[in-house]
Structure formats: C-alpha cells, structure tokens
Amino acid sequence: MSDVLVINSGSSSIKYQLLDGDTEQVLAKGLIERIGQESGLARHTVTAAALAGGGDGVALTVTDATSEIQREIADHTAGFGVMLEAFAQHGPSLTERAPVAVGHRVVHGGARFYEPTLVTPLVEINIDELSVLAPLHNPANLAGIVAARKAFPDVPHVAVFDTAFHQSLAPAAYTYAIDAPLAEAHRIRRYGFHGTSHQFVSESAAAFLGRPLGQLRQIVFHLGNGASVTAIEGGRSVDTSMGLTPLEGLVMGTRSGDLDPAVLLQLARRADMSIGDLDDLLNKRSGLLGLAGVSDMRDIRAGVDAGDARITRAWDVYIHRLRAYAGAYLAQLGGVDVIAFTAGVGEHTPEVRAESLATFGFAGIEIDPARNTAPERGTRIISTDDSAVTVLVVPTNEELEIARQTLQVVGG
Image 1 (cartoon, helix red, strand yellow):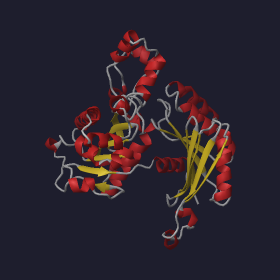
Image 2 (cartoon, one colour):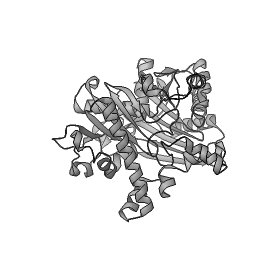
Image 3 (cartoon, rainbow, N blue to C red):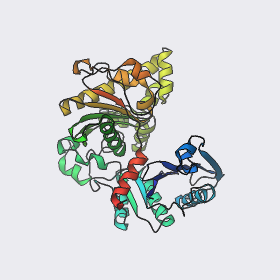
Image 4 (cartoon, helix red, strand yellow):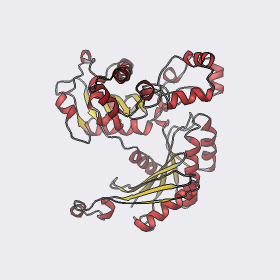
C-alpha cells in the first residue's frame, strides 16, 4: 500500500484526506475548524471505498459514514490530535493503513520552490520567510506542517506549492514594469496561484482526449470564489492571471482582480483609508460582493434572471473580464487547442461557460448548448463536433494532485 495523507492547513482550520496511492481512491476526509476559538468543530468521513474494503460489488451498497464532534481545539497540534482520535475511533486504522508520506499544500513558494519539496528544517525556515508574500496563508500552512511532523514523526513530509507550476513563466510574463532594483529587493513579480489545479486539469484534459500533453495549447479557467486563468503550452504555464498575490486578475467572489493602482492612491488621499482599510476592501469587500452585494454565483444568476440591475452589471463585468483574458491568452499562445473550465463556478454554471466564449466564433470556438447544460458530471466535452477548439469541463482534484506529487518525491 502507498497511502498518502494530504493536509491543507488554514489559520483556524485543517482539511485532510487519506488517499490510496495505488487506486487513487479517497479513504477518509475531514475538516477541523474554529481552531483557537471557544468551540471547535471536527468532521470526519470514512468513504464507501474504505468501508467496502475495496470490494467492487460491495461498494455499491455502502455509503460514506460521517461523525462530528464539538469541543475546544486550542491550536493546530491539538487539531491533529483530534484527527488522530477520529481515525482511531472511526477508521480507517492508521496502524493498518499507515501513510507512507504526508503531503502539504503551501500557498507561496516564491521563486525558491519550483517543484514538490521534502520538508526539512531549512525548508520550514524558507516557508516562514516567504510569509511576507502570503501573510494570510504561509504562516497557517507552516503551523500545519509543524504540527503534522509531531503527529507523524517517522514518515516523510512533502510541501507542494501553489506557485510552483508557474515557475516556468518567462521574465516577460512575470516582470512588473516598476523600478527594477526595488522590485528585486522586495521580490515583487508575478508568481501565480492555483498551480496544482491548473496542472491537474491540463494533464487530465490531455489524458481524456488521448492526446500528448506536450502537443497541446490550453487555456484553463479555475473559477470558484477565488478565480484564475492560465495559458498552458506543452504542459507548461506560460501566462497566468494572478500575480504577486491571489488578488490580481479576474473578478472573484470578494476580490477585485485587476484595477488601476492609482485607485488605491486616490482612496488613501480622498477617503483617508489606511493600508489595512485598503487590504480589507480589495480582498473582502470587492469583486462580486462589492458590485452586487452577493458573492455566490447562484445568487448572481438568480438576480440576473430576475432583472436586478445592480446584479446584472456585476455579471456583465465578470464576463467582460473572462473574455478579455481568454482573448489575451489566445494571442499569447498563437491559437488554442483546448479550453477547460473547472472549480465550483466553472464546473456548475453553464451560463458562465457559454457567455465567456460567446464572442469567439471568429476563432472557431463553438459551444453546444445541449452539452453545456446537460446534467452530467465528470470530465466532458461541451463544444460542438465542428468546433475548431475542444471545450471541456474538467472537475479539479487538488488533493489528488498533491498526493501524486508527494509520491513522486518519496518514490511511492
């Protein structure tokens, strides 16, 4: 067996999955949240695959089993204790299915980390130093790594970085046009994010189509509450919408995406807003929420259908930005073979897919309305048979990608 435990640690939460590295099935998953608060919450699910013991016939009659507890969880170390208790009480047994490695999602690897990396004390120091570039994410990711290494001291731990996939960007794509020595001194450049998702989806698209990854030009839209788009040539990222931080690029649930930097200067001068105020505005009170008053795409679509003028304008801005990036990356790639939509909005909102590509008939891109609105799930083609570009929906699986990369490092 080559089971891998995948950890995604937030400032007050720990998400985890135990995956069978041979079959790539999820055996258990869980969420520990409200860490450091008076009443923590832990949810642990043993999947049908684990309960059925791998028997294909039995699996059809078994469903997931979920347990839940509420109690104070002081810190991430205590959180891992709760997780271990859940495995011991509800399974699968980590004695019988001991993970061969633990894979960790780390948001920012800067320019230092361009591949999955075995965690050492030096790597921990580097992740901590990079917290200046991701103060909301890297400290939490590191806290999870430290706690996990205490809980699993005898297995290798691997850090998988959101930014690593985009380290193939050329200087022309990652360089900002500001004073060069100043930018270098403060590591200011485009890094890109959602890398594990973009890599997983682009590789899955090639496999689904039975075409060599190295021969494909792809545009991948990762559209969720956070959203990004990446131009991928031959399996390598050549341009991406997020930048120094996950704030740049597309309109998101609560994040602004692209805007004139002078907007911040104007608000600081005229509205007397501090750096903290501006940070809160752009990350938490902008995007669809700032434009429409709601951030969930289901609410946006309901508002558009009801004729709400404010929400309709938000929708129009959202689609306008998607088309702008699609057109830019079509030009950067010199044409495209595959366009893929993924993540919550990308996978479940056909109107977004249809409208974002509605003006690209000149490039031979044609969406099939019936395929696009069909209730099927899973990887599927939504373009017409005559479309010059294959348009897909590809469900992302970042945990599986982290597990795969972790096994590559440890030789599983």
